[in-house]
Length: 251
Ligand SMILES: [Zn+2]
Ligand SMILES: [Zn+2]
Image 1 (tube, rainbow, N blue to C red):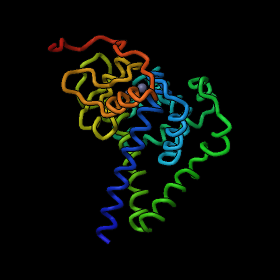
Image 2 (cartoon, helix red, strand yellow):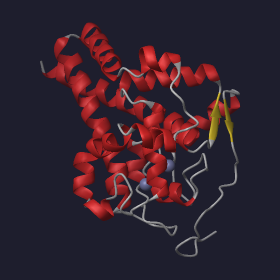
Image 3 (tube, rainbow, N blue to C red):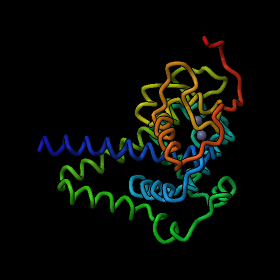
């Protein structure tokens, strides 16, 4: 029994890392900010992975996130710890997300370039089918206990880490650039680079989030491999900053 639980936790963690990679590379950097362009075959793979591991509708995610950038840490930010307190954002992030994601008018306004496709309508917009299928596959492959633990631990960890990017990475950590987000390398390791959030708010169209000496952005390493394979195009290599640095950095 102990071995089954441990196996479930390990598989759950791996699934979360796969979901985090697809979230930051496809939903965030490719769709929401157009920092990279992904070839259609790979885009379809990302869409299926997102559906299977998170149930997220890409255009809704992009809309909520673009609104966050447009109104960062103001009254209109969908999930601002400055307005709501970091613990509330950490614990209720999914509810805050859904409030905007379910508002059709706002999704159209912020994600006009991402219309619903026929594949979305018939398959990928059905979150419970994707997540149900994931759970079924896990249970069939690993058995009911390990499979159940894997599915539940993955969902909780994914929600927890997504909440952390919006809550902790707007509250605690370093601010090398002049914006309210923060950099946390430990969180970046757990979220495929998303923890370097201060950098991201400083240069939102940059495909690379590691912008200071010593920082590591795991997703950027993957994007470089995908670029070498010709599957991904990077919009621009030199980051285009929207705000200046807080302090002079050693060169
Ligand atoms: Zn942010
Ligand atoms: Zn962003």
